[in-house]
Image 1: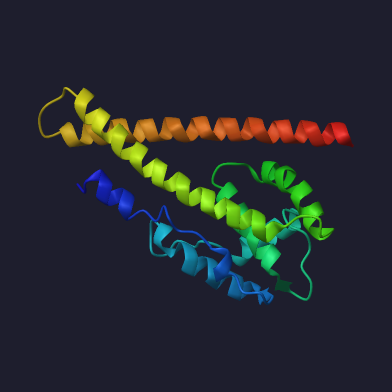
Image 2: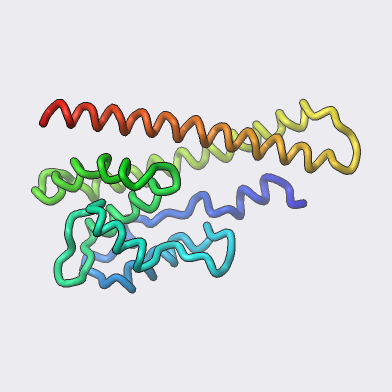
Length: 193
């Protein structure tokens, strides 16, 4: 089995759609899909896996997760919003994403929110986070190796099982807190209506 540090380095954790990668001109759906495929290709588990599909984008549009497009073209702001949806969909339900992004969409439509600045800040924060996450993963792996007492050919399996369980617990904890924060935002905006 590959060592954990090698798996971490080859998992595409740093993959981001940078603001500089998004053209200033509106794109058609196929061009948006190509942009995402290029940016997130290294995150695929399997070669035939799709990062983004026409169906996904159409579902996001029908679900009003981003404001309507014009002339079948997606602006830079649409692409930024689709990128945020792409990252959120692994953790939150689409209805939560919709309620979370609705105030943002309204502000963007009214030209009252600097979406590009927000997105650049967000991607910078993600880069810092990924560095910390990698360090924490290695630390947890070392801690597991110190704790596991089972000796023999199954030692590596037991260590990896512990690591997978710990990573899953961490993921669940972050998801729960993210959901609670969505609920707080919803409560705040419902009070304002």
